[in-house]
Image 1: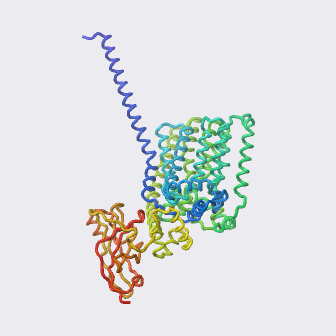
Image 2 (image 1 turned 180 degrees about the vertical axis):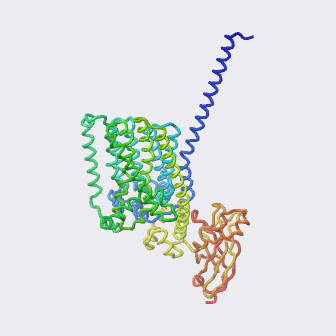
Length: 617
């Protein structure tokens, strides 16, 4: 039998063993939660990355034709100059983006999808900076930190910015916020004060010569740099030469930027902004609320204006609270970075409202602006827990007050997630629609030397057909266009052998209609699991060659029977039909064949079934 002492030892050992097991279980659960939180936090980035990989199109679009091709031509002629790199483009001097574009162009033969990759990487840099500031300033537990990071990433990687994600030149709108958040992150680092000033000045220069609103960086970064690095007035006086250097470099940037500056012809007058202040105010609020309100099917302008008003209201309450506690140096140090990030959005909104209200209030909802406007929401998301924790630690808060804070935060989070879900579905539809238009533009660009389709070029690429045709042939000669332009009306140049185990479609019929022909069939690209991008119509001449006489685009029709036949919903829009002019064919009897065209590879696959037609006149 065990003695009393033996029982005590046995009980102690059992308790210690249970305690050890409990600690192991807690450690395992903590690690599991930690990894789950990491996966959730990066999920928005993964989702956006998949969308970019799926729907990006290697085709220069609109302003890209005015920004880069002339540089490629000048490089080939050894005539590129400094003035070409820093030249004004619209309101901006895009020096650093031009350098990035040039480097990527000569590494990838100007595959503009790599510009979209850099855009995504810049967003990742912003996300890392925001997360680091979250950890340094919010000082919350793992759950709260992860939740805030998730909400921030939902916004940073929001597809509502679709015009910017899928347009390589829009890298310029990501540059300023990437520079600003990096600079603020550097300010909160352990670097020497002099290094901080130098690094921040370099980042502000990059921001200035990337996009027009990049100059705001000088105003945004300096207060953070001052209040975080200087602990007292004497510290400020000791570093006064650094501030003088900052002002001197800023003035130098302004002089260089505005030297020989010309107001773009496309820019509207500033007079409407002051003549109709109520419209300017609505533009301002709609600009701020568009990242959450522009996805509403009914009254998106009203929804965005209301949401923008709520954002400004919350920000003003936070600002007033911080002003009341401005002597609290620790609180000021924790919040100044977020206040300046919010101010970046507010200043951008003010400048845009004055400069763009002439285009109409509805233009405030442009997807291009959301990359500027969403950072007010991100700043508020981080400021709220800092202020709430400060209130709790400096007052005897009642349980009812604590619950009120929790209910407010929970309501805001749920509302944000619901709004984002609506935006996500809306944005994906817009992305798919934009993808179709870009693919159509790329297709008509491929055949620009064979088939004249001015409306397609001017609607989907740039509003000057002759200018595009001249430039695209020069780019094709320089090897800056992939795949190459179709150079011959003989289909042999792009025809590709079909895989024997794959079906690409058929030419179902050709029906004469006086001087017109109705053609129909179906075409599919099994390698991409998508309907064909275009249908090429050919006739066989006396030399036994298939000659291209028409290219059908936007001819897709729904074919439910194909979905059932192949048990694949991707075949739904694989049908095609169109009426073509008989003038495209020469007189005589001709064998007609159709081909499925893959715009991405520049290859054509012959469809099953040929048809004989006779043209008598």
